Amino acid sequence: MERRKFFKSVGLMTAAAYIGPKVFGNNQGPVKASVIEGVPATEFPPLPFAYNALEPYIDAKTMEIHYDKHHRAYYTNFMNAIKGTALEGKPLGEIFAGISKQADVVRNNGGGYYNHLFFWKNLGIGSSKPSADLSAAITKSFGSVDKFKEAFNTAAKTRFGSGWAWLYLGTDKNLAIASSPNQDNPLMDISPVKGTPLLTLDVWEHAYYLKYQNKRPDYIDAFWNVVNWDEVNRRYLQAGKG
Ligand code: MN3
Image (tube, rainbow, N blue to C red; front, side):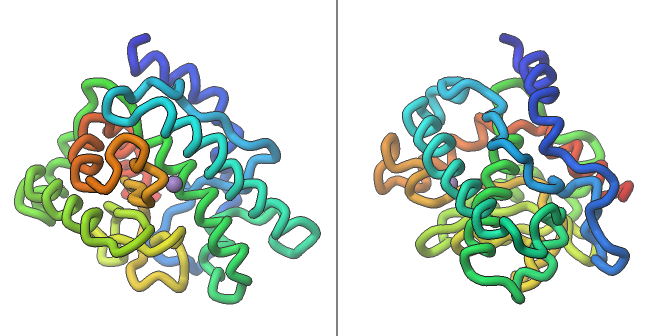
């Protein structure tokens, strides 16, 4: 199936996972409500593509285990952790903005739920590319799109242990790259880097070990073949608009 059409059709299924306007309070700085996935869906959100859709870059078995075991476990554990508490029904962005006050089980599983949801959406096979606006911003911040990829790759390769690499719009309105440990992300108040996430890459071993074993750099190189730039462009546009 043509990727664009495919994503359009699955977009309907995942619409419930997106937010309404009631996402952030008034004092959350530059993080825009429109790019934060909202209140956790009452059912585990579907993967927006088939397990084998990203072959050969990400293999079907890895996708199946990653989505159906790892991601589902984060979701289930997070929902169980917030059930019956003041956090139940709260938007994720609001929870992350005060995550330093929460137990590790909320931080780790809430982050794991959100980061994977985000990651699936920025993956796909197709001919998408950075928009003119995003390309210009990337060139301004990193020198060129190639240099941006190099810097992102370095962040992903050098994250010690488990974590994520991010492209995000920082509080100074410039694009920036960082990595986060475990299931943290730039929306969390405990994060040393804060901003609106635009693109992410999971560098936990469970994301690549079946196919790439210890060769994390090969997995990172392959990732660029399956970036859904349409989604990154959408997030960038919405981050700018607020
Ligand atoms: Mn993962």
